[in-house]
Amino acid sequence: MKKSTAGWGFCVAFVWIGWAGVGSAPAQNPAQGGAQTGASGAAPAAAPSAVTQNPTLAQGLAELQANRARQALTDFEQVLKAEPGNTAANLLASTAAVELYQGQLAVQYAERARQIDPQNWKIHTTLVAAFSAAGMRPERDQERAVLEQLHKTGPPDARQATGFLVEMFPVEAYRVDAVEYFEPIGKFHTYYRFLVRQADGRRAWEVDVESDDFDEQSWAEAHPAEAASGNRQFQITGRGENNQSVDYRNFSGKPDYDNIRVMVVESLRTRGIPGA
Image (tube, rainbow, N blue to C red):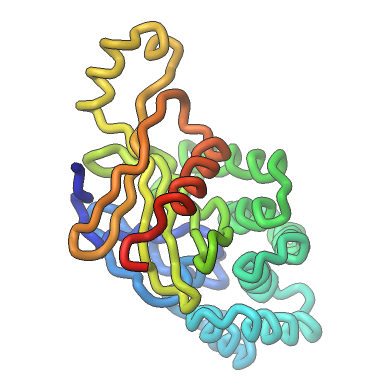
């Protein structure tokens, strides 16, 4: 049974609401890890001057970081009544709406931010999660494609980013943050990570979608036609504290997010979360 090479403290820094005026924390190198057991991974880790200069915006950011998205949204909307062109407030309002599963509202604020600052590449990361929350798959996938291209040819911070939040969705009493990596990371080549959070935002479990070279080589030798067509073998593995690990299932094919999401949700619902 595999164990994560980075341990329970492993965390990717999400490139979601990292607008230059909001100033999310710098993206971490996955190899460096970094514990994130508190509030939502969507909220920026630090509030820069562009936010702290506005007390209501700073208050909303603090609420968002404390996993109080509803109050945060109220604060951001108060700022927007006075400053409808405030890009930071629009992006943060979109973030709060995503956490509240209010997809159409999240899209409204994210698209407004894009209209105000169309050259800012990081707004696309907010749009991915907003479109996901609204069930707008074609638009979501268009933004994912934009991010993939920016990761290859965009500005330095876009090329250095490791991944982004695809969506948040509920499973039973938990919230799941689905992270997509631009390139497979780690020893076991993780393509997606699903962070399972308790009601207070603390991480209870994670599910990794992996395709490591050792298993892939033996699988490709046994299935040459499938391998030649670009398919791979994948493993869906759950991990928790104290080296807890559950091998949920294997599958072969391509790393299609929507198919994988179905398998992850089914695994969580049928097998549960150890210790929950």
